[in-house]
Length: 326
Image (tube, rainbow, N blue to C red):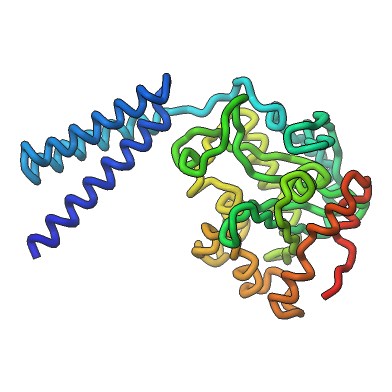
């Protein structure tokens, strides 16, 4: 029993040192080599503590190292001003006057390729009394378990407002799945035309995309959900926040918005993290169409071919929603 307890303590200590190494290696300012050297020294110091001081004092040393790194890590603030990449250069801002929602910096880029595009930022107004549905897009870019999720509100006048929760990257910065856990990118709400944010994925990146109409948890839920998004958009315009690949990503943030509006919703499910399987959860909950077997619904909901055929057509949103063969 003592051996098992000792092994558990050592495992926890090693995990703590490993987290410290990654946090320091990714977030220390200056050349990457400096961060790695400091991370290596922290780990070496903790391991040496076990060898020289013994288990009890070694644990105290590791706890001290961990506490210092956690306090420092918690003090890191995301930047508001930087040399941002063109596709995230402007922050959206929203104003509400009764039912009239006006959003500045709606992205509507004209893409010739993923990296060759004409930037176009627009100010658009939406009548919230005309919301008639919300759709959820799942864009698969790395196997069936991983997807990027986008919500899009439909209006009776034919408008569509898509919002994609992403990272705000600086010029020359690439997205790293590991770095996404360690405060490398501010969180960014892309407020866009579907011809931008959906077509970018289907037509330029060649990703597989599914679209499902989501049933609201209660009457007026679509409007309330959009206004909750708007509150976050305006808050980020004043004070940026970090993206976190585990707790503040494209799917868990949507879930948090939904939980805020419906506290009785189901608790976290593993499919929120393996979000490529989230449509199956929504189907089980009756939140998407259940009139068909799920496999048939998924086939009908894939929009790749329709999106590629629509391309730059101003009727892009209508064409991807055209009835498909079951």
